[in-house]
Amino acid sequence: MASDNVPLNGEGPALELRDVEVVYERRGRERVRAVAGASLTVERGQIVGLVGESGCGKSSLARASVGLVPAAGGSVLFESREVTPLTRRARPRELARLQMVFQNPYSSLNPRRRIGSQLADALDVLDLAAPRERRARVEELLDLVGLPASAAARYPHQFSGGQRQRIAVARALAADPSVLVLDEPLASLDASAQAQVANLLVDLSRRLSLSLLLISHDLAIVRHVADVVSVMYLGVMVETGPARSLWSLPLHPYTEALIGAVPHPDGSGFLPEALPGEVPDPAHPPAACRFHPRCPYAFDRCSKETPVTLAIESERTVACWLQAGGSPPARPGERPQPLPLLHAEE
Amino acid sequence: MSTLAFRMRARRRGGTTRPAWRQPLAVAGGVIAIAWLVVAIFAPFIAPHDPLAQTFTPAQSPSGAHLFGTDELGRDVLSRVIYGARVSVPIALLLVSLAALIGGLVGGLAGYFRGIVDGISMRTVDLVFAFPPIILAMVVAAVLGRGLRNAALAIVVVAWPSYARVVRGLVLSVGDTEYVESARLLGASARRTLFRDVLPNVAGPVFVLATLDLANAILLLSGLSFLGLGAQPPQAEWGSMVANGAQYFQWWWMGTFPGLAIFTAVLAFNFLGDSLRDFFDPQTSWGGDER
View 1: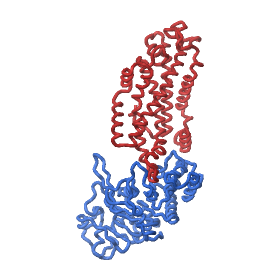
View 2: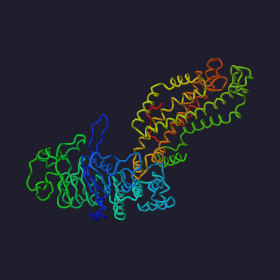
View 3: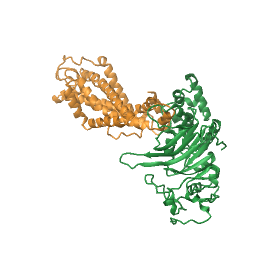
């Protein structure tokens, strides 16, 4: 949607992830590099969509971006400040304007506390409203997400999934954030609630000049909501670009496959094109390009060299050898000259 | 109890289980438990005779004058059973509260600090669990010396680890929930979320466990008294009365009635605990490793 990519006050982007790595280590188990050096920039007021199959490290990246898990490598900058991982102490005050909304609205609200009390928590901790004004502020927050003031006196189980997710958004808004990281906020909702919450998010982003990092496996929704879309595969970013141009001209074979997998309600267009094979085990990622074993266009270079991230046109990047070599960008399937295939079709 | 009332409403809305008052076991357990509490509190008014007075003909069988008969020293068995409630029920309540407090504290610290604190306290718990509870309680009671207070302390020693384990597990799992993470992101310290979000969610299951444990405590206390390690004569205590009755088997009423008292009290708290458990969470099954 409409947004300017120019920083508002020259302080750098709202949220910047640079080569972030997230590693899970447990005794007796192999270490898993869930995120293997991913970079992403969210400009102020922008909605950035992050898509990828389940298990590709999206959620780990989301958790690292707010400090819920420590980044094993790289850095996370929120308005040019380092995001430090959570300890037992209270989170640094400057980071309160970076908030997160979780996937499951059934587990992200305390079942034993009234909505009003949960919303007032942030106001209390951050001292954002005097005790007398808290009630009014809670009602204002509920109103922002389209819920009546009476909701404050009720318990989470008295609401539907969509309403709960809106309450979760209201709780994040209580901290007066400038960036919201949303980890699959629509995945556990039914279709009508998805549309409601998605519209609410776009609306809030515009009204409160809020930057959103919207994580989803559903490219169809992200396409309608996001300004910029990043595509993640097995812990790395494979392609980033403005939503419209990425949708009309995917440059990475994985993006092309994801778009091909979106069903069309009118039955027109292309048939869903399934990706061959499964997402590999992140503990044992394929060498070189991580996508090459499933890629229909892979050639010998793909299994030998890790693709570099290429800047295409002004706003797009892609990490694919197909787009290297200076020829104009094109759909992987529409490259002018046939490339030697490494894997024959099964 | 407000959370209880709230759960009741929730369950009714969900319609998966019938409300608690329609479950016969819960009602039976509740009625018997309350009856024993009333008996314990108002024993002097209910008991027809002084439990220690040796003023009647010894070894009378139950009759209109002595409903439960008299014992070998001419004491009224009914009065002794009624006064016995004053020993078993309040001591059981007290020692279960103490065990829950100690265990809850240990488990809470283990779950909160994790790491080495967790390791040390949970290995200690494992150590206590390695012994059969009645044997360990006997050893502790014997070391401390005979007497009701020492018997109660011995039971606390064997009872606290269940609470430590349950509270630790709950603090760990609730501590990792998204609502706690949200609160942390909003700037709450870990300590604040512990008191505001974690502990209120731990309280329910611990309350259930404590109710079930009351039955155990009464049984263990009677057991220790039966073995002569708890209440000392001439105090009226169910376990020691059963032990006494076992010596005079021909006078069956001496052991049977205090035995029935133990039986009903234990059963009542078990029913109550089981119903509370179903009520708080039908999915929870505590794997049987706590007791």
